[in-house]
Amino acid sequence: MANHVEQVIEGPDGASQTVLVHLGESPLSWLHARGRLSERHYLAGDMLRADWEKAGLGARVTMRWDAGPRAGGRRAAARGIDPTVAQLSARARFDGAIRAAGPGLSDILWRVACAGEGLVAAEKALGWPSRAGKLVLTLALERVADWYRVP
Image 1 (cartoon, rainbow, N blue to C red):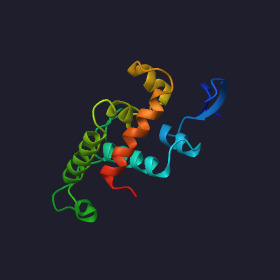
Image 2: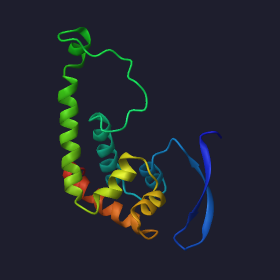
Image 3: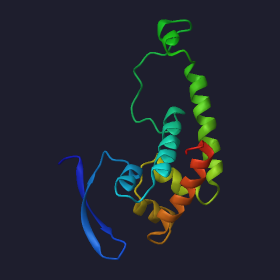
Image 4: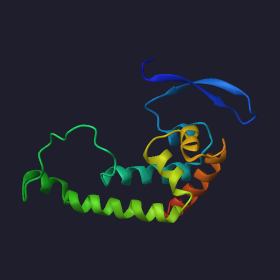
């Protein structure tokens, strides 16, 4: 139970209830698993998060101990792509998706999909009323799904 925490949430009827939250579960997968996000929106958010991680935009908490690739070395040849090119491509996709979401929508999108904040925490951080975040997040994910061409 060390990776679970009790959290009080407000249901759609306004009643509060205590739920057990798995700390390893992303807010997007939590919403999707409970039918609050469509498969399309979940996939778009996951693609955005993956590009954010591939681009190396997240804060590093520890030092990287893996050796850098040597030019022409076995590791570079096995991957088939220069890590810098992969990072730049991911950054370009991430930036394009954030632009597609648009101003006012990209804030909550980044907080929930990339930073892993829950909707309630993101709403509070942005100074929004409760339950406004899901609507705005859904609009942002719809635009990002279009940008990534998620069917």
